[in-house]
Every structure is written in structure tokens, then in C-alpha cells.
Image 1 (cartoon, rainbow, N blue to C red):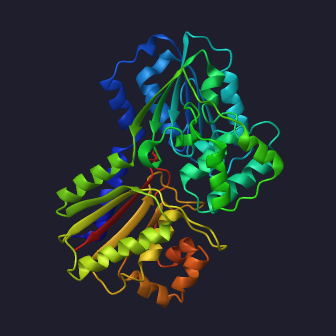
Image 2: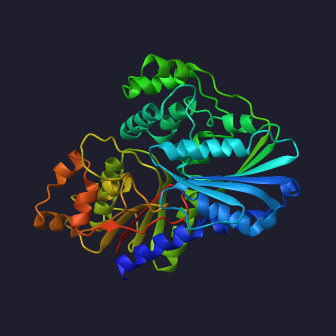
Image 3: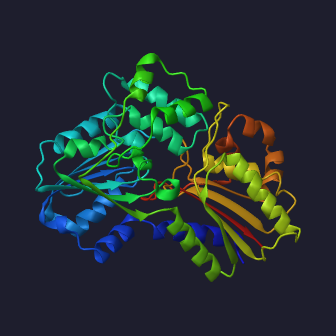
Amino acid sequence: MEIKKDILKIIEGSIRYVLPENLIKETFEKTTFEFLNDELYVVSIGKAAWNMASSISNILGEKIKKGIVLTKYEHSKGNIKNFEIFEAGHPIPDENSIFATEKILEMTKNLTSKDTIIFLVSGGGSALFEKPLNNISLKEISLINKTLINSGANINEINLIRKRLSSVKAGRFAEHVNPAKIFSFILSDVIDDDLSTIASGPCYYDSSTFEDIEKILIKYNFNFDEKILNLLKKDTPKKINNSENYIIGNVKKACYKAKEISEQLGYNTYILTTKLDCEAKEAGYFLSSIISEIKTDESFFKKPCALILGGETSVKVLGKGVGGRNQELVFSTIKKIKDFDNLIIASVGTDGTDGPTNAAGGIVDGNSFRKLILHNIDYEEVLKNNDSYNALKKIDNLIISGPTGTNVNDLIIALVI
């Protein structure tokens, strides 16, 4: 077994399986939608927005009256007929986020019940699709987003706050387009496919209360000013009548494809979870403990084995380093696996980006700790400073793929022989 080639083959095959062109084609082949006779508009938001829009354009062609793509910088792949394409900031909204969102709101206003919007949603939509409520400035909303992301809060907690400060989240976009109908086709990047959390639920009602918000404020010691607190108290739509939602892809699909490929390669394969939700380094410590038991024959996992996990961890940023949750996860494993050969661990964002870096994630093995020593890199200091990117770069343990065109959470794989 060529263990590094195998793990990369598993990752690449799993991500290819959840590309939007495959999932959208499958969805429209299986279901006949009555709205295809309506006046059709398309709005596509998120890191996979260009691929999703291109796919729907290939299927519907001239039936689309007009469309807009809003995606992350460097994620567009060119023109799409009848579409305007905008790129904007992620994970922090910027001027282009607001400008493009206003273009979408302009295109979708004054529609009638004979009009239908096809809404294509992928991860990253919360930052990209944004128009702050009332008199919240871009500077304020950007600072709030940065504070939330660096706090260690999970995506559900982050989006509970985000959507109360937005004029397009928490079902407010669906309210804006009413009486037109809106059909959302969604690549889920959140655990349990919570429709109110994906892109902060632009077309889905929000069941949260201010009491839920208060718990988050206390838990993470958020100190927002009175203006923001008053907006957080403002209620959100509790009923949406003009929206239908379809989950077309998620991390579970990617994990089961990873299992299929691993077994074809000869590994005894175990999906440990598709709902990983904890601090990245804690996930790394846990995974390395399991691997240690396997290597010392104290585990019921049969070698050669593949361990597969899906989900989304978080990082509480306390240092001034550079990294992402996938990089911190794999970096945290390397001390405990340093005495073992014939194993490899990789963790990647299925979208090809991990935090504010050019890496998709990281890949480590039993030699990685020795490489740290050779480069005079202090393992504990790297974790303390949240500097996994620079450390993994120096020891050549980054995975850099560029944008993949999809986004269904993170995929973590360990091979042990």
C-alpha cells in the first residue's frame, strides 16, 4: 500500500463526488419541477456559487431570464450567459459583499406570483450575502464577524447572531421576494443540515429567541454596544410561505464516498462520525489517541484501517499566528503519533480553503514531529500561537488544492497499516 497516494486518492474522489455539477444534474434528473414554466431568475451565493450557477445554466439555458453569482475572490471561472458575476470578501464581509447583495435585491424586487427564483446556496454565504440592518456600518459588521469567528463559537452560534443583524438572513430574503416563489438548492456545510444555519437561512424561518442569544453572549463574553444589543433583541420571521428547500449535498455523502474508495483500496474502513463539532486541537488529540491504540494492538479496529470523520471544528484564536481549523487539527496530532510508522492523517476543507490561508488543510505522519525538531519549531508554542500554517509549511505538510468548486464541511481521514 502506498499510504500517501491512497489518502490523496480518497480525498480527491470524495470531493469530486460532491461537486455541484454532479449533484444538481442528479437532482433535476430525479425530480420534475413545476416552476420550470415560470419566469426564472437565479441567485447563486457561496464558495461553490459559480459551479452551481454554471451547472443550472447548462440544464435550463434560455429559460433563465437573468441570474447573479456572488462568490469568494478568485472563485469565479469566467462568464455565464445571462449572469452577472460578483466576487467579495470571505470570511469577513467587505464593500463588494454589500454592493453585490444590493444588486441581488434590486433584481428580485417587484416580482409577481408568476415569477420563480432558483436560489443556489453553498458555504460562505453568510459572509458573502450581506446587507446589515438599519445603520450598522460595514466596519461594525466586519468587526463583529471577526470577533465571532475568533471566539471559538461553533457555526450555529455564530449564525444565530449574524442573522439578527442582517436584512437578508433569517428568512428576510424570502420576505423580500414575496409574492414570487423561491426554490433553494443547497450544499450543506453545517452539521445536521440545519436550514436556519446554512448561509444564516436567507429563506428559512428563525426559531431562536433573544434568550438563546443571551446565552451565547454570556458563554463567549461578547460585549456589544447598546445599538447592536437592541438589534439582537429585534424579532426575526417565524413563518415563511413562499420558500421550498432541497439539500442536494452534505458531508455525509462525502464520507460515504470516502468509505467506498477506502474499501476498494483494501482498507478496513470505519466512519467515526459525520457530526464532528469541537475544538480542532481536541479533535486532533482524540484521533491521535485512537491511532496510538491501533498501533499498539489495543484497539478493535482491524489493520490496515481507514478512519473517516466529517464535520466542522472550531478554533479559539488566542495567538497571532496564521492557520485554519484543519491545519490545527492535524498539527495537534503529531506529538502523540511521533513514535509510529505506516500511518498518515489528513484534514481538509472540501472547498479547498482553510481559514485565511491558501491551504485546504494539512497532512502529517509519524515523521512530522522529527521534522519540527530539525527546523527548531516548538510544538507547544505553535499551538499556543495558533500558527499551524507556518509550521506545516516549513515541514512541507500543507495540502494546497485551490478552490474545488464545492463546500460540504471538512473531511478528516487517517490511514493506519
